[in-house]
Amino acid sequence: MKHLLLFCLLFLKIIPGKAQNIPSLINHQALLFRIETRHDSISFLVADTSTSATKPILLFCQGSLPVPLFAEIETYGLYMLGGGISNFDLHKLRQQYHIVVVSMPHIPAIASKDQINEQFQVITNPLIPYSFPKPYLEADYLNKYVERASQVLDYLKKQSWVDSRKLVVAGHSQGSKVATKLARNYPGVTHLGLFGANPFGRADQVIRQARQDAQEGKTTWEQADSIMNDQYRFFETVHQSDSLKAHPEYLSWNTFSEPFFDDWLALDIPIYLSYGTDDPVATLCDLVPLFFIKEGKKNLTLKRYLHLEHNFFPVDPNSRQPNYNQPHWPEVMNAFLAWSIK
Image (tube, rainbow, N blue to C red; front, side, top):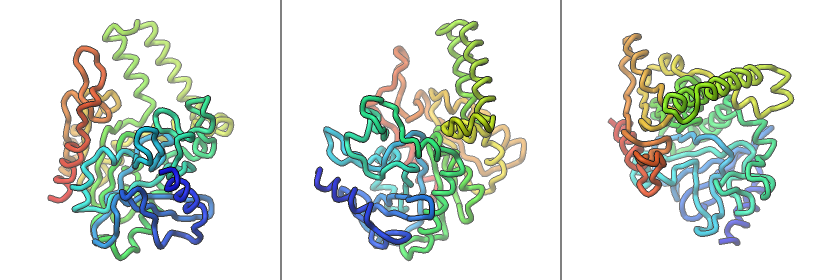
């Protein structure tokens, strides 16, 4: 396993040209491609072992944090994380689509065990659990993700094994925002899937959580008031140019805090909005149908999963902790698949 990992890492470094014409098959699970641009190297996987069948693309935009596509994990060896798609029923999805996931910016597609923390995030110092690479922090903003995904789609639509008559773009959490902007701006997107999305961006989550905690007696209203005011000040900071120059990591808060329901309303393609009712991130999704009804739009499908959290695990009613022994991602994505092929 270690020899395979070393080979893959070396292979990624020496392939010349704009894109790999012959991708590498990793772990007998997925094909790994790489595109070279003037300022970036973009890796992406196709979750299949060959491209012999012609199918449309399902581009899945992963959530936040610097997680590699593959990682060497102590108990498993080389493992496909794939932005979360390892949790899906890939066998069923592959029957209809080439499933594509783009790497995080400036994060290796394949990471060894000494490059990651316990949450499989790439770090620069094993003694500092969240020492994320500086180039990643500087590139962790919305337009960068949209730009990189667009370049991958440009490459894919030229391939003979891609059916360009249909293009499904989906995303989870932060990835739902990337998927939204792609649907708005990239030509040819035919379906949009949103999972665990926040229609109002990101910054409001802290404020809503502070209010909920006070209402439930977990904190005092004085504490909630302090948290909210701190968030207002921080939000003001991330919108100041001097602050962004000094702290490029603030770009993420700046760009991902943009409201997104206007983008959804501007789309005429079918939109699928799915979330767990115990997910505080997605609470405001309950309001989205009202906007569509007001505008007379019929292109929204909404699917709530009762008592599930942000990653579609059930929440224990007493401890309020997720039960990781009962995953529901396969059910969630299979329902989305059925919707997308109607």
